[in-house]
Image (cartoon, rainbow, N blue to C red; front, top):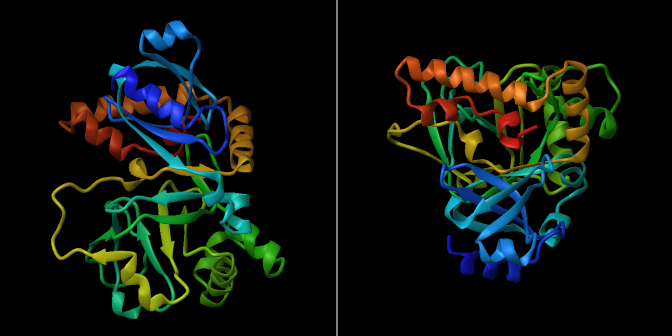
Length: 303
């Protein structure tokens, strides 16, 4: 981008404020969430800009040639209109056109529908094993219902915490709640009353896969949010790579404690991912496809 374009954007939305978070798309197709700062007049004239990542506070100086696109992402008044749970746990925004996957008879659905973010996983026990391809029809904001992740980026759900805080205290696992329709529906009601129409969470605690569950107040309107595709998409991707995540500070604190305890800083994790990417390439898989398949919460947030 030309320096005039970047400067015009920064002047329109000055930096540092919490409600002026932006999204930048780099030439290598990496997406970063954060804000720009002008270090000094010299950097501005040289078309160099300091960008702070809001998730790990890492600062990087980019030139305009590094940047393909800038989007103003979301204003704080929109965030504040969310319910108590979204403010406590965080949220994510599923972009319009995101490809999702599921199995099972859709005619048996009642008040919620589950999806996987990857095509090599299934979050259903139904006998019908035909993989279905769905696509979001609009941007959908969902509760970030993940308590923390491990050093391997395996997520743990917040559903037991929500159940104990808002319903009754029981020693339960995430599956104890999700596989018990009565308990699950109690949680869904709590979330609906808090203006949530769905969650992103772990398929099962300590498993690497993530799930999306949708439950609008009037479930008959589910077709307003997603549609079942009649044809198999040519390119099946890990949807996580394209979903902006906005976890709570508590999520970062809990996760970082686990990383510290196990001596797992991000550089070590990144080296492991790069090793796997190389292995994929040696098997004939493109680097772009490998990076997509290996996308995790840690790689998304760079923590």
